[in-house]
Image (cartoon, rainbow, N blue to C red; front, side):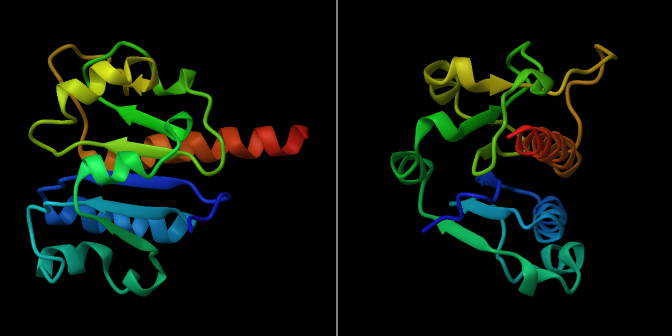
Length: 160
């Protein structure tokens, strides 16, 4: 059973071990659940993955999923937020709440087009000021979006 008070970061078929390691460390620091959707582009024993997460792995709640379809079938779609470069809606416009899922695609391809089409109203981006830069590093983007979600959830909680 998932913690309804925790945010969730979902990495769909991640490919670069240091990104996943850095995001795992981020999740540990914020009590965020990390979901890894297979296939992974590396072994979870990878030395670069371990090094990026340092000695914080024991503090990270990691859930593994055999496929993106299996993951999606198990979720409430109203809790899903898809991060992509293929939309113009800023992540700052999203209405994040505790228990939501921040979903990121693989570093080289992003999320599948059919998923982006199906959930177009739930897709958000991190705007780039420089049109020559397509996107930021996955771990950096995950950190920026997660902290915005945490900020909004705290603001909402203080108004209740």
